[in-house]
Image 1 (cartoon, rainbow, N blue to C red):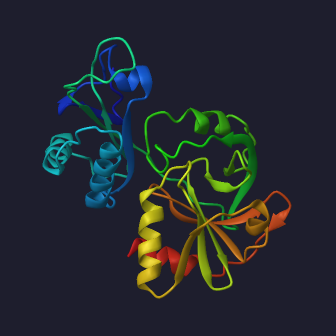
Image 2 (cartoon, one colour; image 1 turned 90 degrees about the vertical axis):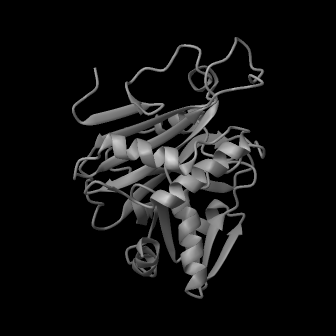
Length: 271
């Protein structure tokens, strides 16, 4: 039964059931985006739909047209409350086996869940370094595909309520991202973020912040970062589409008690 706080459309129709032969269910063969909803309005709608289309193209999926998503959104009739909206595309149903169907018909899902967002800790977030190391797969790097098992296992590493997020490294020890977010550091008047050419998810908030910062005349670099660079940063920040930009106050024994540029960047991101 669909929760009164959750509304779901499958291929534009109310329902919460996927066929047992759907390749998204069987193989993680699909992509998704997660949008914040404020008072019934999805944030960055056009950009999110476009990003979803690019991720579909990376997997060879036929993306639903933007107008199809807009029609689904109108049918969903979001209530005037806050929440999270998820757009999901799979390769659809197929015969047993990994080989993609030659004429696959993609399946789409739209899910809205009403949520009241809790405020961030006033002093900033507390991070830990995860034990799990991300594997390299350049073919999928940057894509928000449905196989998020690495993130699931990393998030299972802690239950302590004082930890807000985990930091993920790759198999060579380079910093890639948070479990649920992208990472930025401020160092020597430059905004630095890890390269995502071997692994990791390129979130829309990450893309948007880089574009806005560049337009404001800030030097932005995608580069390799190790833990030492993070510890030595003047400020550390995380981004995702639901929570926006958030300031990090502590990573294990290292502390950043004061904001340096995060408020200014937050204003850019939300503009």
